[in-house]
Length: 216
Image 1 (cartoon, rainbow, N blue to C red):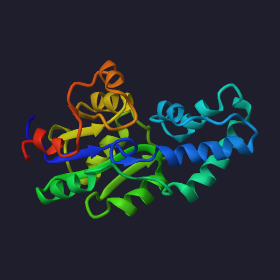
Image 2 (tube, helix red, strand yellow):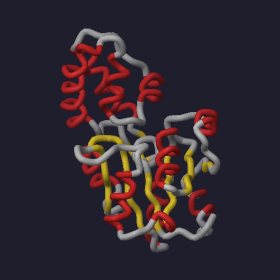
Image 3 (cartoon, rainbow, N blue to C red):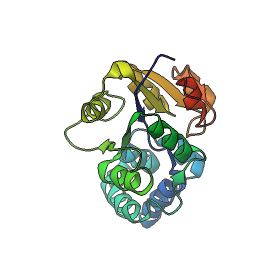
Image 4 (tube, one colour):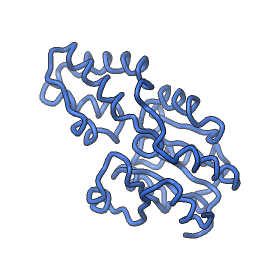
């Protein structure tokens, strides 16, 4: 791959395995509302377009109770977003190497802003100075706006940046931002789903990213 100096990472399914905590908070809110609970595989398919969309899909046909369930989800997740969440194996080693080699890094996520900030501070603050989540006034992925804001804060250009993610939303975001994309296979989508979404360059382990960047 061409020479880059900047990498933008997705968060859920790329750097962090957040699935069980999302499941726990969704099912807490659904149970409180007297609704049927969801499975881990259902939640895996629902994530990627922000937590509101996650809850919309989890609620299903009972959209009239969406606001109630969404509020309960948010309150529960704010307290329990880190119960079972953690970096995927090899991620911290990858970030340490990238920092050592002088790469600029940012996180761009459709998770709401406060949770992105909290999780970045918990796990990645020594490596990643910019972390952007969903908030009012800026279009979420797959629009390129949050990626462009991350580049502005880093002082980097899209020509020197590669996007790393796991979902169809990430692949489309990279396309909309005019960037190359590295797709990780350890996240929330199958390789078949990723290929169908237009993924072309894949890695099965974090340190393979270094090899693709010519730094392995």
